[in-house]
Length: 174
Ligand code: RP5
Image 1: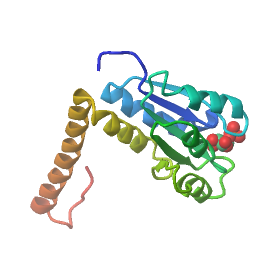
Image 2 (image 1 turned 90 degrees about the vertical axis):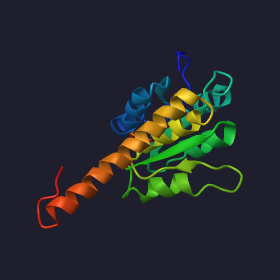
Image 3 (image 1 turned 120 degrees about the vertical axis):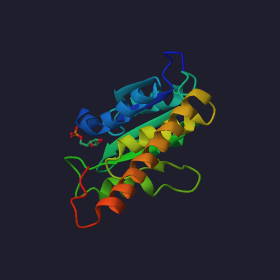
Image 4 (image 1 turned 180 degrees about the vertical axis):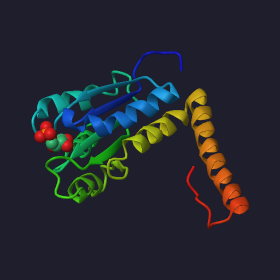
């Protein structure tokens, strides 16, 4: 991908979500996919959220990753406005009870307005999923995603060999 045009918009309800959401930024950087990252709060900046979601597609974004915690309405509300795929990252935040509140707020969307919800705090997986979506129509990115997954497989197979040769009673740390 040779352009600096952001293809992925990473948004989060608060700057306190950044320590989690940076996981998405890091993996997108690794894949060489241009992205933007900012704070958009469904509750504190609702008009900014509407403007962001309304203009996202015309600005050239292809996927939105939205992270929020507690009463995590940002991903679903953005998905209700944009025609782009929205990946939701539930965050266990300062106002979460135990994280289930964030998960269910993002996961339990009504029919017609899907949000692709990743696991609690799984911003890295959100980045990988965004790369997979981009990779479906961009061969360069698609090849990188394939290589990434091949590498995961190779790492596991190495551990399988190690377990076979050293036996289960030996330390199985990396
Ligand atoms: C949510 O409230 C944000 O996404 C964040 O996870 C949580 C707490 O926000 P702060 O009070 O730390 O700004 O809207």
